[in-house]
Image 1 (tube, helix red, strand yellow):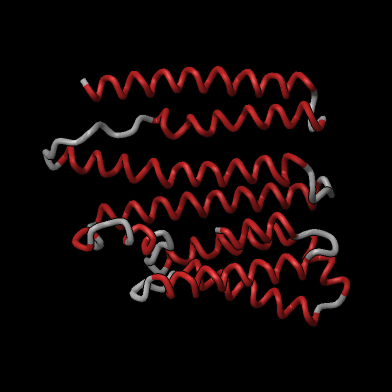
Image 2 (cartoon, rainbow, N blue to C red):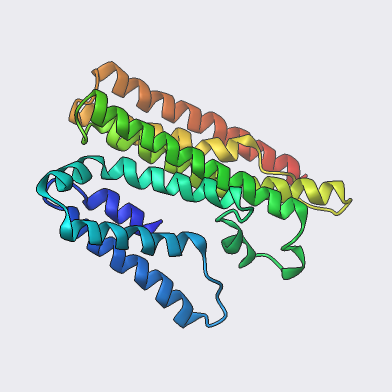
Length: 251
């Protein structure tokens, strides 16, 4: 995701070419560097799509008119998120979820074709597709309805929250599946991670959001204070439940 993150952060009025070139260079470094370090490394759909997407944007940027440049600078965020959602949904449609090759690098070869393992990657890839669509919808609302591409909620808070949720789900859900599979097979294993493990980082996100609202005036002061308070309280409650679960599992 690094090239897309760089692109999202850098793109803006007068910075389209810089954002595209740096993202393309980073995408190439990731692909080429990965294969130089690991000669047997498989080609990954997402990395190849990274290179293709930013290469196309670079070519467009060379020949586009000033009006097209302005359009791209305004809607580049939605364009990139929709492209990522299309990649995720397309990989599911062709039965090659884009998370699969990454998961295989951390999984014994004998499990690569296991139905549970493959189904888990479908679910995780679907979660990423949903996150990209949420981010695209938030950006589109900011651009088309609010007419403010840098609006704090639609341009940053909601989009970052969606990606954080997908990241956390990517680490939490496979552990849940593994624990259930081992239990069903009668193999001794720790209990499945509780829902609190998934939600805890997300509730923690409420605190910096509340601080930003208070500091930048991105909403009424009571909203910022409520978000901070809610984030602290929920984090404590969920943290306590997770510790209790860990103690129960250890016992």
